[in-house]
Length: 266
Image 1 (cartoon, rainbow, N blue to C red):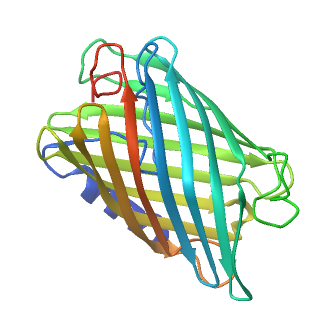
Image 2 (cartoon, rainbow, N blue to C red):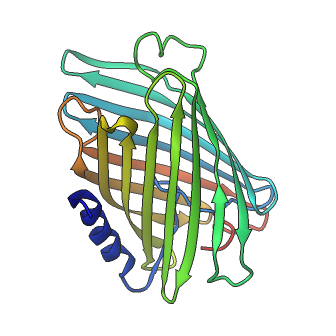
């Protein structure tokens, strides 16, 4: 085993061995999970994200992420940010980012709450009719992401894994892997941790980040989500991979049964 996979294996083993953890992906994490809002329920995230790398900074403010439950196993998604980008040669430039359209389908769910849950989550990223692509603020679309999400409860531990590929028509493809864990410290607060690995194919760039964060429900159906992390493997000057990532946002859950949780119940 090479040094990089060995380091990843040890980190994932450490994360997965913590006691009394219950993972749930999705905002504020990069890793997603098989959970959906539930039939005819809404989950709306209004957030700001930060990606800082040597020579370039990118901020999304606001990032609008709208999700709708179609039945208990399907989630429809639309996401669009307003971008601010800067490099060493110039200050910040702003513009509308690419739109992301997705459909999550939980293809397998065991009746036991501690059983397996598996979903697929195809997402299409397209350029909006603005000048952001011409100004170099966004990558040239379309780009297609096809990940698989898996959760499994092992005693007091729930493991949340995501892996997939991002296919790019006018660029290099990417492979993503994510592992998330969490701990419900109280009825209102959930602590989170995540390791996320993003590799640009052909070996041109790699970024593995480790982050921590949480969700705090200050009112029924209203949550503050936050996360901060740093790159621990890969990157370097000119790679375009972030050395720091961050997320802070408000999540609004509009549910028919007035419950503030995703389905299946995490």
